Image (tube, rainbow, N blue to C red):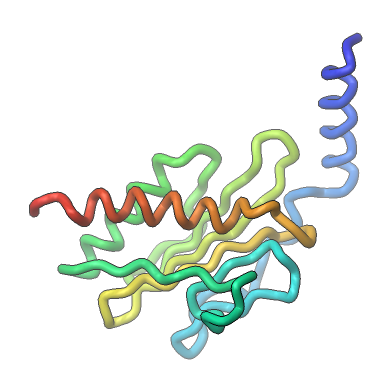
Amino acid sequence: MGLKYLLVTGALALGTFLGCAGNYPTDLGVNNGRLKSCPASLNCVNSQADNLDKTHFVAPMVYTGMVERAHDTVVSIVQAMENSAIKEKNKNYLRVAFTSPLMGFVDDVEFYFPEEPVIHVRSAARKGYSDFGVNRRRIETIRSLFEKVEILPR
């Protein structure tokens, strides 16, 4: 047995033992026009956080045109991403669970489509303290893909 096999096997066993998926969140969604605030931990970003909070604030996504098109575009993007599963979808809200392939950690990513041409986002790990920037990078990847679609002629 090689060292790599032992490390992977040990990590999988530890992940199973610790329950990396975390508890299914029951308090997500939009409440009075706001997504849930980030905890003090370093594993969450939110476009509705104070913009002076460099740890948690991430800019919202902006668009021109119809909200339905923006919504459909975000849905298409996240469906095409690996390890994603849409958990809730309605006309002004989308929640997607992303599961890490090795350890099974789950991040909940939310998109809120209010009346104005902006999409508020929140991405947070269910467990742990730090995500090493995974949630911020995921939102920025989605933003980049969204902007490429949004600049195409209609």
